[in-house]
Length: 159
Ligand SMILES: CC(C)(COP(=O)(O)OP(=O)(O)OC[C@H]1O[C@@H](n2cnc3c(N)ncnc32)[C@H](O)[C@@H]1OP(=O)(O)O)[C@@H](O)C(=O)NCCC(=O)NCCS
Image 1: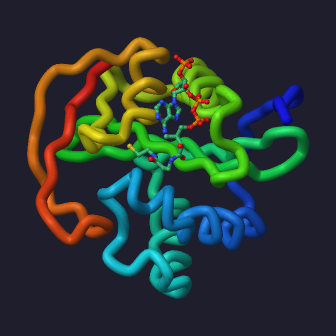
Image 2: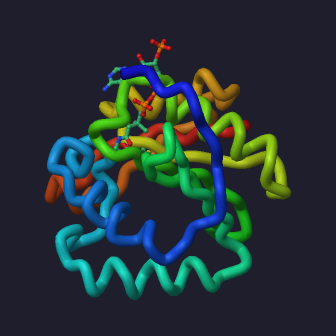
């Protein structure tokens, strides 16, 4: 099914169990690679989300597709530099939603520029989303990926 109605809105409490379920999907965890140590620990997930929702430097929007919570898009600061991240439930992949969500997010939020992103080199979907949204590769790095249990390579993007 191709989504017709799409919007970004502020996160509400009822979104959190849905985000949690979406973040425990094995395909998604493998793909994202740089995940929480224990992605199935719901208490840790809720604690983390309460913290980031209260943090004024973290901007987060829920992605709504045809009235359903499809995922989220957010930006946070690392060493004072804003970075974007996003996650969609498996059922919502392949409809252009991440591209639409990131495009709208960048247009809506008042975030400092340039804005950055980092992605596992084998996360081809996320790389393509970033490219379609105007990001370009500015470097590479290595980091420990909890979902892979090893250090892996990542691309650094800027827009
Ligand atoms: C990565 C993710 C956000 C992509 O979401 P999506 O809504 O399916 O992406 P879109 O439909 O906007 O696709 C954008 C482009 O990427 C391509 N793409 C999407 N998934 C792909 C995949 N697994 N492999 C190769 N290309 C892929 C699409 O074909 C499209 O390119 P095109 O327009 O040239 O055909 C989604 O798979 C996801 O949430 N994954 C788990 C979490 C994650 O990895 N987050 C990013 C961490 S950096």
